Image (cartoon, rainbow, N blue to C red; front, side, top):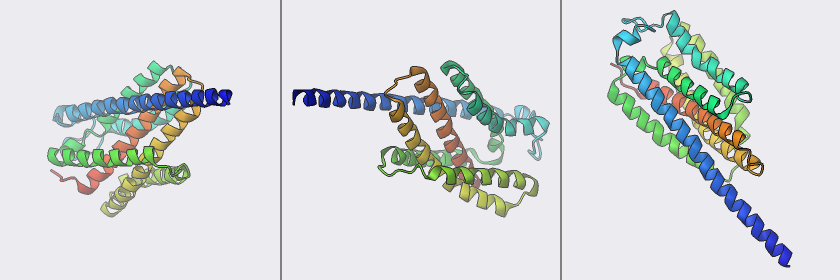
Length: 245
């Protein structure tokens, strides 16, 4: 009886430690993501509001990308795949530096929005995205429903969106762009909840080991996933609701 009480008390302490560690882990995820978002916004605004800087990447009149512009446009995609392949070989500090570099490059790739959309509509859509993201992430964190089965479906959707977006770069069809934007918002809304639950689940599964290096890199990878969900949802919402200059 006494042994059972001690074991029960020990289990309770361990659970409390995991809960406390999970909160700290999620704070690290959201904090890293927020710094990345600020870096992206700062770079995008600095370049996008300067015709001289933006002309390095795009034609000043048509805003079509030049060679360097195409490189910057596809660089974030290449960096995401590279990060996934290199994460196990990077230190936690190296992974964090890579993430912030990625965030800065993403700012370069979306800087053009400040020449196409009004500043007010960019701010409004950003606020809508932030509120939606917060609600979806909170639901993914608190729900008792297992949504891990969404993963394969959502990833297939992302691949389909990527292919359709590349094709429409050359077609320039407003109807296809509208459909891509609507579907994109839905897919990345689902990914926001899915990724949040996966970050939480991964932490709980590995918490017993308390591998600090893994926890640090896991937080950065989680921040990257949620960052991508936010950025993509923002860009698709901007295409749908942004007021053009």
